[in-house]
Every structure is written in C-alpha cells, then in structure tokens.
Image (cartoon, rainbow, N blue to C red; front, side):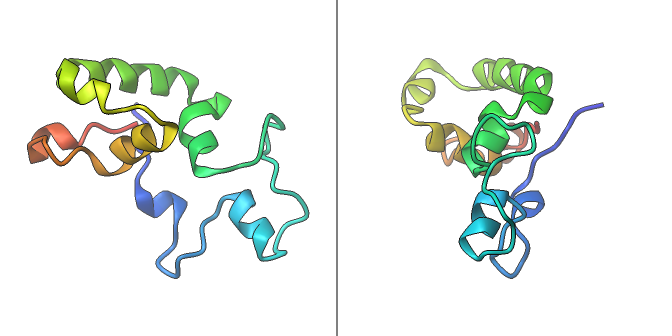
Length: 102
C-alpha cells in the first residue's frame, strides 16, 4: 500500500506543524530531534531522510524520474526543490502527472 504525504499531514490549518523542530520553537516539546534520533525533525528530514519512508521514497524517486524529463530534473538543485515537488507537484506538469504520492 502506498504512503501518501500531503501538505495537510505536516501542517494543520492553523499554520503550526506537527514536526518537532517547529513545535520546539514554540517551547511545546523538549527537543527538536526526530524520534529516529538522526537529526532535527524538519520538513526536509521528514520527506527526504526519515528512515521509515526509505522504501516508499525510493519508489517515489523512480516514479518522479519516469515522469519528469531531463530539463525538469536539472531544476531540482536543493532539498527544498525536491520537497516542494513531492508536496505540490511541478508547475510544468499536467494535473495527472502532478499527483504521484509518497
């Protein structure tokens, strides 16, 4: 069964995310570290490096490479570019191709 990550699973409507790094800035948790213990629980970590999503992430990368042409792939130069692509799609893609989920 696929795992889908959407903007809504990271942020509530009230703009406060469930991620520890964000909660830590408001003194709502004792530590910004992710439960995996590897690094702070940021959006980039949650989507790109969180160990639980490893296999699903590889599947998504393969799907992304199949959908995007080389020109679009070369525009993904920062972690935030990849995160935004996973969450929101790419402006140059059709609606159907924009919605591959992790």
